[in-house]
Length: 85
Length: 196
Image (cartoon, rainbow over all chains, first blue to last red; front, top):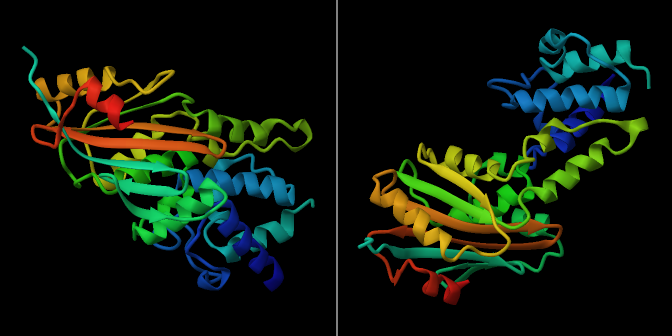
């Protein structure tokens, strides 16, 4: 699971062009939106694309994203359970 | 008779160099615009992380405007170029060209209009002013004085930032200047043709 969390952090940094952030800067339970990493609604859409592209997970209900993208911890748990690739 | 307005300051970006009022303020020997833009951002100490999420056209316009604008001023933005947002349109097309791997990028899509660069500048400098983006075959030396003059004469703006920001592939060029009631040269077609 730790390897998956690290992979997710690196993918978030690359996909969202977080130039000044390293994987070590993101704690597993840091909020990704709001006061945490400060991601916005376009970033959320980009994360949905990332789940589909890299892990074969299609989110049919956008409301699901609110819980899944709460932190790297919640993303990793969801990906581990639902990934198809 | 039409009132005369003046060019106050101008910034040029081309060939890995930024010049403010004719003087070099930054140069980098980077092979790509993205590499150049990143170094310029750091060197000019812009401290605005959203810069890295912008498309190349917005980065170019943002860098060129960064030394000319006063936050929260009543400065209208009137920009133009030849290739519109084609550079980003092509990048977006790359994300949807493969039917077997069809992953349209929302972050790229939001930049598939040229006037988005004006929104980025307005957000950063808290401008609530008029802004317009036009597409012309060549630098519109007659259009800018007429349009900027109209904006100031009719009270729509106190100053106008005019800009030619062309971006396609690794070909880029910015010529951005501020117009107001005072300045070093009359804002007219002849002077612009000499400066561009």
